[in-house]
Length: 261
Ligand code: 0L1
Image (cartoon, rainbow, N blue to C red; front, side, top):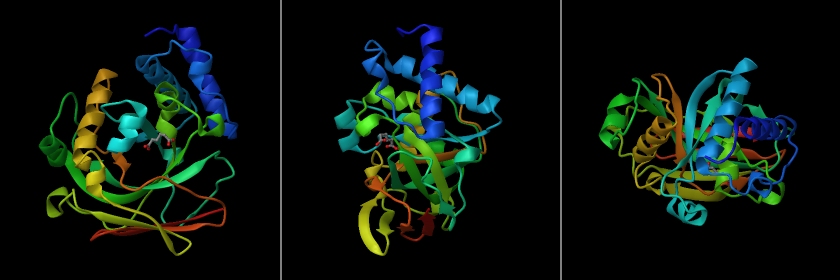
């Protein structure tokens, strides 16, 4: 850690303003070149506390940067994580306003709804045993950095680009489906724009959840029972704009539909 508490607070305010008013900012390391990953998570925690102080409720977490190419590109060996609040949740089949986002992009993901708390270093089997059900979901990410130019520290401080999330389709018990081979197809305005299989997520999405619990542990946090966890993108992140209509289809798990306004 290199930054003092005043700098952490200042950076959290900078990120919160960018998120709230959809005003792009320069990457944080331009002004704080010595910033570390630990500092970035301190900024993220300060951001979370500020949203909580404003009445938002943390309902879960997301794993990001979970595909091998993205990890290589960012030089990481574990996912970046971000928190999810009730204010980011949107219902299936709703119209999601993009006016308050900068570079919105959609990703197909498997969400885990936890039946029991997890903490510390956990295995894939422990994640599956603690999972109540899994569910198709779409994440809308939004980087707040000008020209989409960022580095790892800046992205983590920006809550791993969390913006909105939508759950839908047919929930399944984790033991009832092979979590590595769930094929997904994303259609935008009737055209297939992205596809993939769930093994894109670190080989098995439950491994991403296990790693997320490990990162939470390093932050002194646990994953509470009842948490909604987005395990990472199966497909590429596809830019969306006002007027678009998106359907994310998941093999044997139904689909999630949203429109953008
Ligand atoms: O969900 C994620 O993979 C996090 C992405 C962070 C970088 C981006 O905004 O593309």
